[in-house]
Image (cartoon, rainbow, N blue to C red; front, top):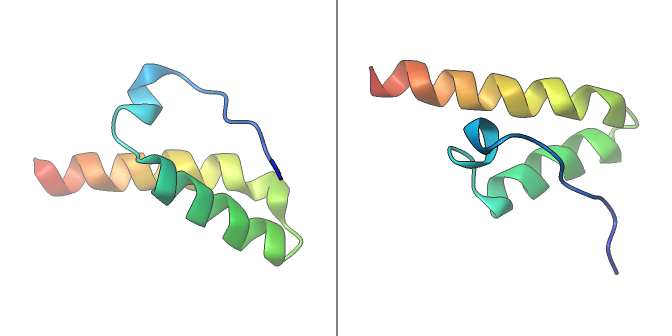
Length: 53
């Protein structure tokens, strides 16, 4: 069963796997703060970019 829809730019999804995205969204949804998941996704991509520089 589908539980969410992924929308975003290639700048986000190019650096984040499907599995990572689902893990982040599921974590926030399970804590009842699903509205914070989008910012968490962006933060993860930013952190990955900083690590590779």
